[in-house]
Image (cartoon, rainbow, N blue to C red):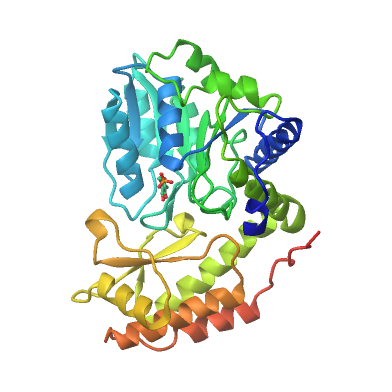
Length: 378
Ligand code: PLP
């Protein structure tokens, strides 16, 4: 994929570019599970696609219902407030996903339909907790509420099963740097016809993020401004790997298998998986809680220095309290075993009292359970 990014940059107004643009938009529609919606690709990080979702559909002072699943849900909520939206943030404990019942209750109480959007983070990257999106959709329907449904899939798309149309999502937000296996730099909105209709009357100011010109140009594979052409070469290659060579369902199964092996290792060390509800375990990463009196960032530093292995830090209120093991993207059994071995050795080096049985538990699981078919390299 990095070699694909290396290709010489073509004229983004020329014929070759149109073919590339149409190809990646069509491929992304398949990743959103064959959506009938529109897909817009921004030369931006995920934060840009967050902003695009809000400014294209909402007006100043609109009420938005968001759910505190962790650090990233908190940042999205802060952004909404900065944009002049009126945000109601349902408090969460960070160890559970968005509670569909709490959302339904709040929507039922909104008899004059002031809430214009419900926004949820699918996979909370800060904690390794997944929200049950189909159940949130059912909650919105049960309350017979017309609010738009917005979902951040930055660390779930192409890693964890996700269905834009089937789950009735109106705007999906995604980024290039996780399941799509690319460097940071591209982000996406997948847009339902309901969201598109809302964008016609939405009043928040928008220019760079405006969907209309992006969608109009996108029909022929072009952009209204200079696209990140080389990233799109990489995206075309990533789509080939995910859709044609391995198959999305096999990718999801591979990630689930690695997540289960990781959780077994964590428990065999005598440590705690941060996510509490097995229905909400993340397949892309595992948050690991440190025993009281041991600083997770010190352990991360020891592991980085001794083994050149970089683990995710605990964010905001979890600083020092947990570390995160990523197992998403182009990742295989031996890469996972290398990672878990580094963690086990590093925990011991840092003097954290753990049982040296985690690597063995993960190996037993991986060698005993069926592996998804290997990627067919075209
Ligand atoms: N949402 C989630 C779930 C994320 O994990 C991230 C970044 O990791 C973001 C939003 C913000 O995206 P970015 O840092 O690409 O702007």
